[in-house]
Image (cartoon, rainbow, N blue to C red; front, side, top):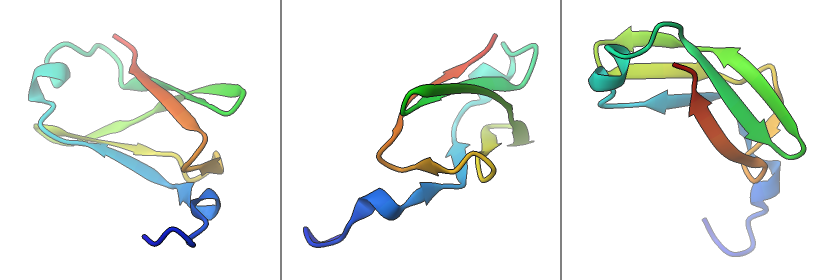
Length: 74
């Protein structure tokens, strides 16, 4: 990206976490807390293979510059 590109207009629709097999064995529920801006939401996510998790955030309208924490719930 160039310095003139305005990245405040980029929204996050999905997060993917790779090489997570060790976490899959420890989770009892597939939930994650996302903190962004002044809000916090708990969202479900899915395991799409033995070591890949995918979180759909398309309904939350989270800007790329707003997300600052994602925590797996054990």
